[in-house]
Picture 1: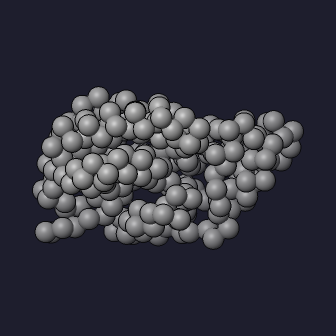
Picture 2: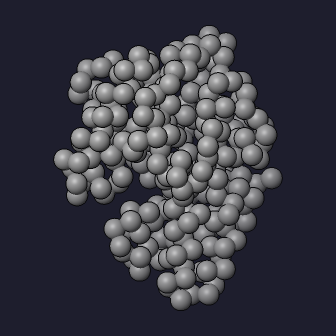
Length: 244
């Protein structure tokens, strides 16, 4: 089984620990994950802002970089959702039959991390140990576009030493939404403030999510409030072996 890591732009540029944690985790589970260096952006920022024609070369690079792999693992519901659902739209609009065929071959193989662990590897206990109080935020794309369901929670519940507490209004959007946070900053901050208030109310030490972009948004608000709550990507918790 050939498996590739699509690390995502935000992890590559700002949160490399999340990408490294995916590699640590998969190697522990016996998966020899590869990192195609030709990879770039998934193209979601362009598609979301209406620049579908400009996204064509990015999608072309994506399918070229990940051609031939059985699975492409992505530590982001947002980017995995883009590859699975938006790439086909871009390819069809381009009128390039070859690109459309390539997308049809690659995009179904793109899986968000929890999907790959639970559905492909068939595991929930990944050998992690993390003795902290944790709450989980289900990000919009993982929840609504991919339908990952309770896979992340199943993985977290199997972590040794963890105390998993419920997040009030968990399914509400955090307000990030990529360029939405820039174009509609007041609304974005108000939504984020609601999410941060619920995180604090949970009394968790750590907020966990599967998308670093959402964690960046919520974490910034939590930090400015000096809440004492830290944020971690799901992969970082699953890769942890604290006290083991």
